[in-house]
View 1: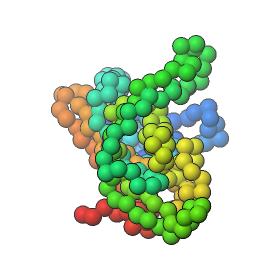
View 2: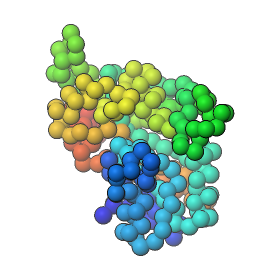
View 3: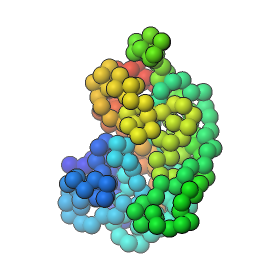
View 4: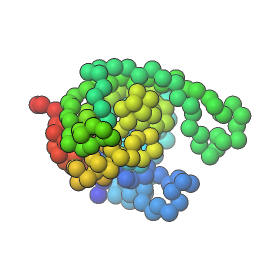
Length: 240
């Protein structure tokens, strides 16, 4: 059963586990389990995702329960008015606070690949972050006997595909567990140290306007057990 974080007649939000695809894609033809299908079967009605989470990312995933709510809510994501917050464990010790303002090449879907205007297109992308905790572990890194890691709160101000993963790579603090943009030796070392293998990225908060009455809706999600266990093993749990 997928944990339900919020539900009314128009919207439903779940805690998506790491490793679960939102819907079927051409790149993962062998997969048979998808959040859309599982939630539809769980509640007995059709659902439509209004935003994306990468397969490896856990946390808040929002669906619409009717076409009108889908259009109204998806428009908020597209216009950038939805406030989102994430947690991520990264390599190194970033500044206490910062903003990454770095345009990103568009990642093309299959439908876009033949369009000449899509090639090499740069999209504006901005991410704010705050460092919540830091640690230094006895994991050798080249000529250094230890390695440094940090837990960040991330607020993407734009919604580009893989934005957080690419932005953290850009500032040389890749997210742990990221096989595409991260560092393999650190991913393997942290997995062995913590006992958990996953992308250490989670969506913890969404704030938007309800499509029916326009009231502010805040949906929060606790970190998954394996994410919290990794933080505990790395001594990265923030002081309460």
